View (tube, rainbow, N blue to C red):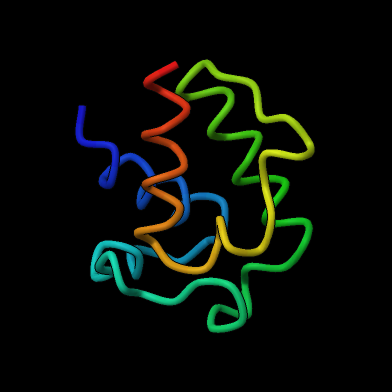
Length: 83
């Protein structure tokens, strides 16, 4: 499983980016740079992570730095899958 591809697919689906996420790199800034990524969208992404990857996201697991870039989001998912 390629976690980055999975994360990008979720972002594309939840944010209705119509394929734009495929061009994102680890350094692509998310929070504050993508108008589609509002508080409701963050909840949708988190729910999609739980559904697709089978882990639970605790309230204190997530903060703004988690959604700073594609790389930080992929690192978060990777760390959850290692547990």
